Length: 605
Image (tube, rainbow, N blue to C red; front, side, top):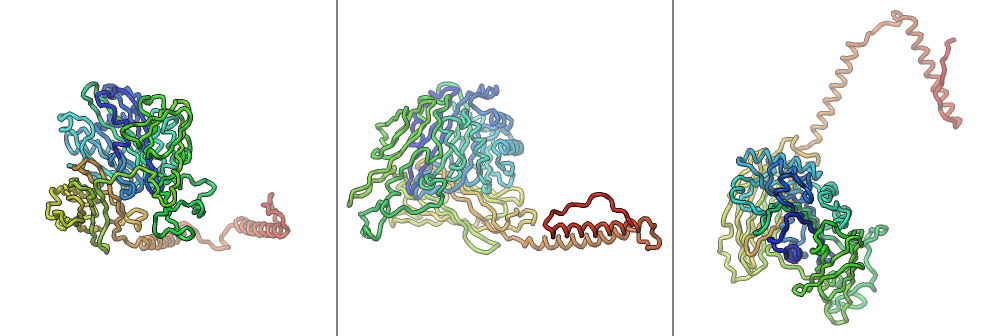
């Protein structure tokens, strides 16, 4: 899928990359089960000389100054929500390189000679990015930071002398909630600020209503074989929308089934009965939609700074389906890829697309597939907790190789310090779907393990794993749950603690990244009502004791015969005045009037 999504962006040779350029592109790809993948890609290049001289044009100054101050050579930031359904949707967009774990994930190469210097710059970087993107990146402390060994490699062009003086640090916040507060700074970094071009389609209501969404920011140096080295800023938004949900009108938000006469049935099924049973084939044939229905608005022309040679919108659909565009748009078809259609758009005109519904099949015919068949992933991965009780637990990762080639990958986990892993319980069991498969091959080839320190750092585990074709590997290990101090529990302690997703980096047969889902770990939780009861009881006791002691020390008790006559007279008159006011108020309320406070002074008779 990566080759399809970046078909045009990668068609330009790296030697022809200019020192300063900007282009953007939107790829639309219908998926099974009424889903639509929309991938927004924004890429800006600026010369390193201009960057070091703080001559910012396309590169945002706010981010550039942070990178310079923190000594950052390469940066990767991810905001992700939802789960990618690999079994239904196929391979991840961009081969998973633009995807992060649930929440916020950050890794960067910092210019530092020692680990202590790297930690100081990492703290500066996370705090600055936290303010820039309105996120809680400042909570990435030592317990949530690791130093990967083989899982991540630099994507930019770095001299060997530079890499020798850099440190790679990785942090993740799986509990972070991604919302529109993170989207607004993302759009402000674009040259057109979301006012024109494909960025005008990004709406927070649609983006965060998607089944899956990921925002990625990558900063890396690129040095082509000819020409000047540039610093590249790439921003990507991937979202999987539910077409039926997006087309639902605002005044009718409750989904209702279509009438029976509007259903298109698969008549090839043996259990099909015209008046009794129907197997709908809409999810196989594809949905009809318009650009305004999907994103809630039309596209406002193109950004004036974008490269005119790169078409801003591309759609991946079968050649048998019809699609219509707005007036003034120019459609481009490619002979070597008949399922790809791109559109050149005039700068000042609004643009929209209309994808029609395929023709209904004739009785007895099989309905044609209305979408491009998703590509089968190289590897399927899932992870879950095992065991029971509040003291011990277990972890199980199920890794399946559906292809015909051996898959070699690095499996990395970053676990919190209160999960004490028993490394001696690590085991790998293989299950083959074919009896001819060699199951005696070595599965786990290398292990890198960095144990946790209580309240100082988490556990880091990296495994080099190899899976034969058509096999499934079960990785399991046990761990112990620590007991926290009562001040270390969050307000929603009974909800559990989020455990970051595992990162899988495939090496063979091709390079790609996979993130598993995050997990929810339940720890022994004390009864927080008992401290509350103790606090209330203690506060009441102190208040009663202090109040009585204060009255004894401050008040002066005297007899009535010892008090001055004027003081007794004033108290009696004040008491009589209160009774009169209360009587007038009750009478006014009974008469249906309003109770007004009495004015003036009352003379004593």
